[in-house]
Image (cartoon, rainbow, N blue to C red):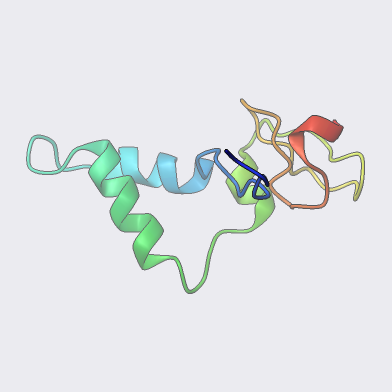
Length: 86
């Protein structure tokens, strides 16, 4: 039985990394998904900004006013509001 629920971390893809992965993919040697995984690992020490992660068509977060609501999932990439609060 589950007695607690862990706070959800970002599950939406980083749109900047995904775009870079599509541009850098060396298919059939390395798929876009594999390139994305590689970029995420390389950029772990210096991650993309919440605005970059949210994508060019992001919406404004109601909590902080930044353009950080993911362009597809509307998840708050800034972390100041959960998807369920929006």
